Image (cartoon, rainbow, N blue to C red):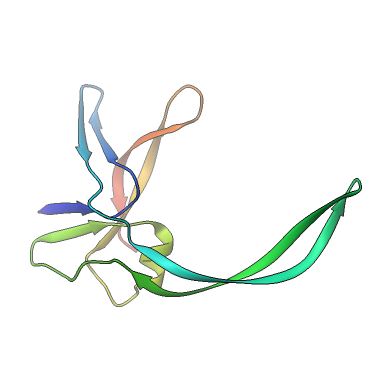
Length: 109
């Protein structure tokens, strides 16, 4: 199976303590977003803008290919319900500071 990464960063798969697989980004699949202004909020005299979002079409997602799975964000996977070739990083691995450094598996949406 070939994996293609369409997230904005490399995906590091932690196989075990001694082995990782790095899957470089080949592009960025995104979901279009429409923002609508909502009422501002006042926090201790500071006015903070708020908005609502609605999501539309998926952009920059390559076509299906036999024997290929495409790594995407959870938002892209949820918007492309007609695709069965998408996977999302799962079982995230974090460093001592809590930063994500990789994943142990992939989730099928």
